Length: 536
View (cartoon, rainbow, N blue to C red):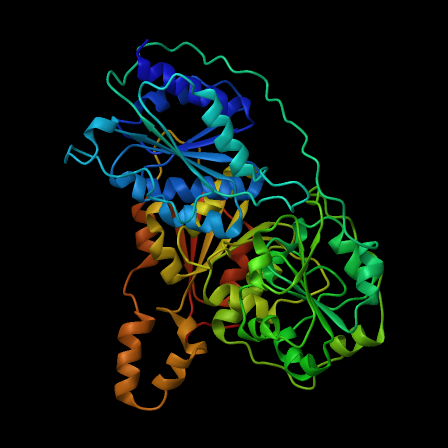
């Protein structure tokens, strides 16, 4: 057995023994030793093969997001490695444990112009927790691999500190030929040994008591706020208004405030304290609230990652939630909460995209719903009802980009082994359309991708650029070309070109029927949002 094969088997066996259960790989020659090792892994390891590296990285990101455990994405050398950067940047900002294991040429070939050789070490220095390199003749494989997994989990911290955040780690490995193996011997792996790490004691009083003592508090709940232990129960018991974004997964709470953007405008002067949970990113009114220096701010967190949201905020440690959402049956009341829940004097008319997004939300209760960035998630943030049955919602909100939405959902669906629905705009779909490309021997997820096609980047209509464009024809033409980038793709035909079942719908009635019975495997539902889209 060659040195490269032995090294690769040791790396994969150590990752498995450390609890890594999902591996995503794109094909390549220099990474062949790792492919042979993955092919020899026993159950319950899951190996996913994606055709291109960018899709592989976001698929691994989705699997890690869904499991909360490190997932490995494996690539060959050269430009393949650079394709991981968007997913690693999202993993950094969203504190997702993602391991990039990249094959490299031997060190003596670096900087020589050799084929598929670039400076891989340090390529992700600004977004990874650490970069670890193994030379082709390394004698100790286990120690650096264990270090990589530990750092991806965010276990390192000083005495008395909040835990470090989970996040991406880059493990770069040089391999020398021969890179192949005729052996099909199963990989021998040890049973994972999960060490316990003490956590800092919770500061101060019981969370409910502490919240109840704050002056006129609001909880601003962003992405993954539901992963804070005790938060759901405490905000209900203390009758605290919760301004929750969709992927906070707190919209079902009786204290979640609907249309909070409009209510915030009138009630902001009376807010006495702000408690931040998760990673809020969606609206300028919330950004303004978090930037106020005349209010005390607190950050509830499992680690020190999101303290940079409000640098002057006081952190309060909460352990990670166990993943089970306890039922919330009470209907709390307080004078402060009642002010936030009074009926609004006027209602907002839904534009066609918001109407379709709301309809999908209503038809996805208790299902997994991945929401694309840009207009769709903002429409749900503004209009989705609170305090009732809701979907389990996922979104890439670390950086809030449209990159890799389909691939992320693909990874979530395979990891959860359940039906997942995606709702996104047309540009978000086209930006990641190559992720529909799947090897003929691969297991397909049960994934329904709903594309709300309004012909371009409608999010800019909500910003200053759209306001400027409405003033005269010249500015409108400039806006149309440089911002909305109206596209001419036939989305239904594009999806079918990848061998994917695709259906176009033009009315709310057609959409409702299509939502009730999604086909097996991967499918695309093309909703034509335009002046012709009917809400009836």
